Image (tube, rainbow, N blue to C red; front, side):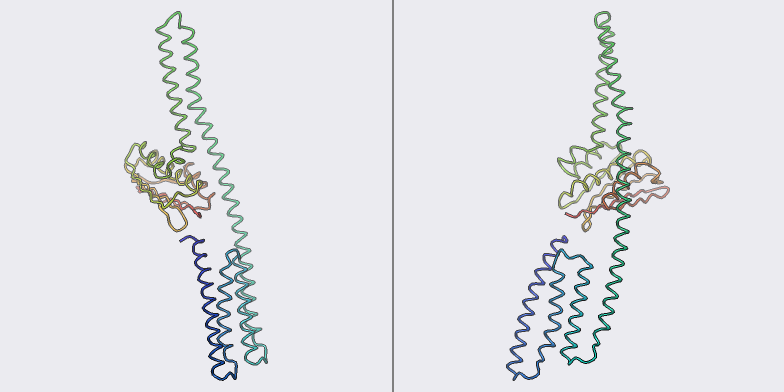
Length: 327
C-alpha cells in the first residue's frame, strides 16, 4: 500500500474512532445521570478519550510536518495533564514537570530536525553535482563516438562519392568500386548512429517499457542473458531510464571486462523503490575506477537512490541499484 493509501485509511479510521468515542462519552453521561448524578466521575473517562481522539485527529491531517505533529502531541498531552490536575482539585501545579520534559524533548527534536535537514541539503547538493558531472561525461562520450565513428564514416563516404564522380566517365569499373565502398561506409555510419541513439534513449523503452527494452539489450549480447522483470506498473520516466542504463552498463561491463559466460538481470519492486540486480559469472574485480560504473553511481544517486557493487576476485559480480519510485 502506498503512503497516500495508508494515510487515507488512517484518516477514515480516525473519524470512525472519533464517532465511537463520542457515543461512548454520551453513554457514560447517561449512566451517570441514571445513577443519581452526584460526583461527576465521567470526567475520568472523557479526559483520556479526548486525548486519544485529539492525537488521532492531529495525525490524520496529511499536510502537517513531523515536528509540528510532535508539537501537537505535546500540547494535547499537556492539556490532558492540566485537565487531570484541575479535575482532581487543583493545588500544587505538578503538571509543570512533565510539561517541562515534553518541551525539552521537543526542543531536541527541533535541533535534530535542523541537523538532518542540513545534512540532507549537503547530500542533495553532492548528488546534483554528480548528476551534472555524469551528464558532462555522457556528452563527451557522445562527442567522441560521433567524431571517431559516424563522422569518420561520413567523411569516407564523401571522399568515395567524389572519387566515383571524377572517374565515372574515364574508369567506370573503378567508379563502381568507390560507390560500393561509399555504400558500405553509409551502412556503417547508419549502424553507429543507431547504436549511439540507442545508448542515449532507446525508443523501445518509451514505447514498450523496461522489460522489452532490457530484453532487446540481451538479444544483442554475445553471451546468454536471462531477463526477469516483474513490475505492477511502469515507474516514472526518470526511474525507468535509470533502471535501463543500470542494466545496460552492467551488461556491457560484464561482457567487456569480466569475460562472463552468463548474465542474469532482475528488476523488482521493493516497497516504494525499483531494484535492478545484475549478476554475472565473470572473473570479478569490477571497481568504480571503471568510468562507466562511476557514472552509473552518479546517475543513481541523482535520483536519491543507492548503488551496491560486489565483485570479489574470481567473481561473481553483483551490481544492484535501488531507485526510489514514489508514484
